[in-house]
Length: 384
Image 1 (cartoon, rainbow, N blue to C red):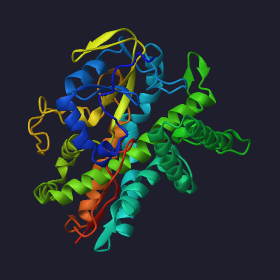
Image 2 (cartoon, helix red, strand yellow; image 1 turned 180 degrees about the vertical axis):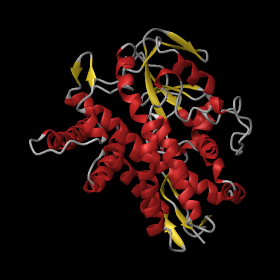
Image 3 (spheres, one colour; image 1 turned 45 degrees about the vertical axis):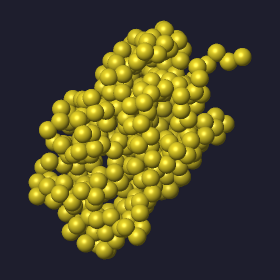
Image 4 (tube, rainbow, N blue to C red; image 1 turned 60 degrees about the horizontal axis):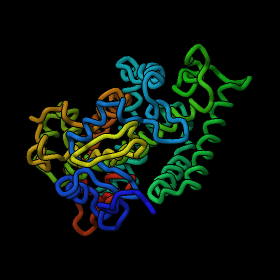
């Protein structure tokens, strides 16, 4: 007989997947700490999610049997690896990468945005994320198609909780990275200053990073870049097309893009959730949760909590940015936030500069993405 609590909801049901934001909003108001066999304990309120983020003693990031650098680690191990990773997103490195980012955005905008209509996800958002990923990592552009196929299958396996397929996909990614590392280690290799080459020279506890650690770092950055950046571009473009007053405000003052992007992505988050594990019995929202239970932090619902963000669907640049959990909080706040913010400002500036007016096509409605993704799988837009 199972000792598991009664299920409060079914995260993978059609009713939830059909409109994730609406479903998560409903759970936040009706059952803010909810149990399911699929996700175990899901938290939807901003206060509860924030509590977990700031208490790494009671809530561990070690949720997988496989190494995950650094987001699947706890202090002091996490601290040591984080010290290696953070310099790759320093202001100096961002300044060096910014011209490359601008060149990619402008090239795509010139190529894709000259028509009256576009399917933004396939023709602009995804190509941007893929090209940026390859440029930042120092990878050949020939990896774009294999990477998007790998990301698609990884999302499907995650939704199905298919451990066999997830293992196969992990092995595929390891093989891809092993080939890239072998090229850089070869006798004929030309010394490079790209990120992948640089990781070969990093050290932890007096020794070089091993291939498993390097692969984990690159996998985490790949998933974040390809999935989250593409989703963010789609969400931002759809919002501006649906809110012409905000679109005009940003066309008139593109200097607001940095702040506006964060606010739009609060309203419609590009990342659905992250996991933690209880290290001891805890009480959250009146529910008793045992040790060694999986906790799922729902970013989308937390960032739309009216207790923190009154009228959460309303775009406002007057909100407290410190409350926005778009990039997390606490010791595990996203180290790549400076890169993501820079990329999104640059790509949205190019999108606005190379279009006269973004508007939705009523005859071709957008298609919402399903878990574990957010945003849109297709987004037809009129550009003129």
